[in-house]
Amino acid sequence: MSDAKPVLIDGEWRAADGEGTFEPRNPTAQSPTGELYPVSSLNDVEAAVRAGAAAAEEMAGLAPTVIASFLERFAERIEARADELVAMAHAESGLPASPRLQDIELPRTADQLRQAAAAARAGSWALPTIDSQSGIRSMYAALGGPVVVFGPNNFPFAFNSLAGGDFASAIAAGNPVIGKANSSHPGTTRLLGEEAFAASQDVGLPTAAVQLIYRTDHQVGEQLVSHPLVAATGYTGSRSAGLALKAAADQAGKPIYLELSSINPVVVLPGAIAERGGDELMDEFVTSCLMGTGQFCTNPGIVLLLKGEGAEQFIAAAREKFGEAPVGTMLTEGVQKNMERSVSHLREAGAELLVGGATGGGAGYSFQNTLLRVSGTQFIKEPEKLQEEAFGNESLFVVADDMDQALEVSRRFEGNLTGCIYSHSGGDDDALYNRIAPILRRKVGRLLNDKMPTGVAVSSAMNHGGPYPATGHPGFTAVGLPASLLRFGMLQCFDNVRPHRLPPALRDQNPTGQMWRLVDKEWTQADAAAG
Image (cartoon, rainbow, N blue to C red; front, side, top):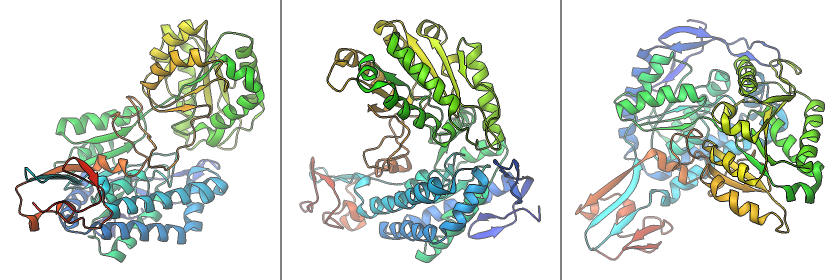
C-alpha cells in the first residue's frame, strides 16, 4: 500500500487502511495511467464518518456567507489549476481536452459552484416560513451529518464527487461531504480534493468538511450509506449498484438520491419529417446520439416513429450517417463490455440490427456506432427487455403501425430523465401531439419540443430527475439551483422559541434584506411584524 495515493480523512492526506489497490487505465491507450489507488476498508469509512459527524456540528454554527465563500474560493482554485486538471481528466477518461473538458465542462463546474454559493448566501432556498400569530416558524437547514457523494464515470468534473452538482448542493446546504471517487478517474478527483480542502482551510471550514476515499468493496459501500452517523447519500451510476446501495440505506432509514438509467425517448411525428426534411432532423439526431460516444445520461436511446415513407427515409438516412461517422472512445473497458451485452440483449428481444453491433471501430475501448429497429407490436410484447439501457453510441427505432399503437408504446415507457416530441411548426401535428404529450409528460422529468435532449443547462429552472428508474425519487433534481439543495436539507420547526434563539433567517428582521420568506402566508423580502 505504500505506493498507493493517500486518502483525505479529517484534514490529513494519509495512507489508507486498505484492502488492496487498483490502477485506473487510459481508455485510448488501453494501458494503466501509472498511478496506484487504495481500496479502503471499513476502518477508513468509520474514521471518515466520525470526523464528518463532528464537522457537521461545527458547520451548524457557521454563517451561510462562510459556506458561500468556500464555494467561490474553490471555483477560483479549480480555474487556477485548469491545465493540470484537464490533462489528468483527459488521460483518465479519453474525453477530448478541448473543447469538451477545457472549454465546456470545467467552466460549467466552476459556474455551478458559484451558483451554489449564491444560493447559500441568498438563503431563500431554505423556504423560511413565519406564522407570527401562532409563533411557529420553520425553514430547511443542514442535515446534521456528513453527506456521501458517489460520482459517475462520464463527467469527471461536472458530476465529480468532490466538485459536481451533488457536492455543491450538499455543501451549500451546510453539510460536510465524504466523496467516493469514481474508479475511472480517481486522479482527477484527487486533484479536485486537494483544491477543495485547500479552499476549505482558506475560509475556516472544519478540517473534515471535505473528505475523500477512492474505492470500497460492495459490502463496505453498503455499510457506508447505512452508517448511523451518515445523513444522506447522492449517487449517480448503474442501476444495479445504485439499487444495492438503496436497499442498504432504506433498511437503515437513510435518505439516498439516485440517478440510475434513462433511454430518453424521442417522438418524431410525420409533419416534422415532411416540413424539415430528413437532413436537418437527421443531423440533430446523429449529433445528439454520438456526442461523447453516446455516454450521456440524456442520450436519445429510443426514437418512436409512425409507419410511412417519411419514417423509412429517416431510418435509411440515419443508418447511412451512423455507418459513416467516426467511432469514439469509450470511458472504460467495462462500458465497452456492457455495450456489447446490452446490444446483444436487445437483439435477443426482437430488435433488428441495422448498422454496427460489434466491438471496435475506434481508438482504444470502442464499439461501432449502432442502430437497431423494432416494430411497435414487438415493443409492446417485450417492453422491459427492449428498454435495457445501452450506455453509448446506440439508438433503437420503434416503428408504430399508427397513432393508437404509438400511444400504447408510450404507455410502456419506463421513467426517464427526458422525453422529446418533434412536430410540425405550423400545427399540422397538433392533434397527434395533444394525444401523446400527456402520456409522455408523466414518464419524464423534462419534456422537450423540437430539440434533442443531450444538453443539460445549469439553470435554476432545470429538472435533471424523473420517475424511476431515471432516479430514485421523482420529486427532486440533481441539476438546477437552488432546488437541488432541498435533497440535503431537513425541515426544522421552531414553536414559541424566543426571538434571540431563532436562526437569523426566522427572526422578524430579514437578515439580508434580499431573502424571500413566507411571512403570514405572503412571500416577501420585508421584515416580519414584531411578534
